[in-house]
Amino acid sequence: MTHNAMNTDFNERSLPRVVVLISGRGSNLSALLAADLPVEIVAVISNKSDAAGLGVAAQAQIPTEVIHHQHFADRETFDRALSERIDHYLGSPDDPSIDCRAAGLVILAGFMRIFSAEFTARYTGRMINIHPSLLPAFTGLHTHQRALDEGVKIHGCTVHLVTAELDHGPILAQAAVPVLSEDTEASLAARVLRQEHQLYPQVVRAWAEGRLKIDEHGMPHWGYEQDPSTALRVPGVQGA
Ligand code: GRF
Figure (tube, rainbow, N blue to C red):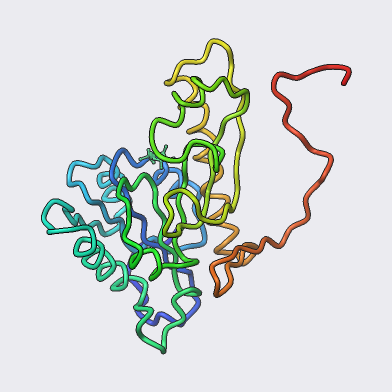
């Protein structure tokens, strides 16, 4: 992964650019960095100055920025300030000479803010999120405890495109894990997180290499064939 001098010709397809938004510990950011992806992480932006992920970015010599949401009168004003900084790195969709969809991706990696509709519309088809559940189950917070409370046998994580409705955008990929009878919220969260750290880099790599395409309507298209005989059964019921 390259993250040194930024190439400012937004149409020149050397490496696609990504901006990563975080609010916390940054373990998914670490996983993206460790995967040595064919993208240029041009900035990591946080809405919290104490986000541990900022240290992860700084260590990797990636430019970081903090935009405190408390300093803004309302959601729309914060979102405008955030999009101004994202567009600085990825190019503005208002500039007709730039193919923004081709040039860059906004990656949410534990960014704990709900966006205005204006913001999500601006990044239609070029902003992705990872959510710690098998969507559409368990949108929102406390997904692991809710999965335990419901007694589900399979849980997991989802990478999806971000749209105006929280945790409801088109699903790009999912990874499933078993829920064990002895699981606690912490043990289940750890099992899911290990999958997050594999799944998110895989999706970003597929996008960067052109195996995952997102059309002008924000709909994903995968260039792969699936084996229809594969299944994950939990518990592993024999003799069915
Ligand atoms: C992850 O569980 C992710 O699914 C959710 O927020 C958490 C971020 O963790 N969106 P980290 O900051 O990447 O460690």
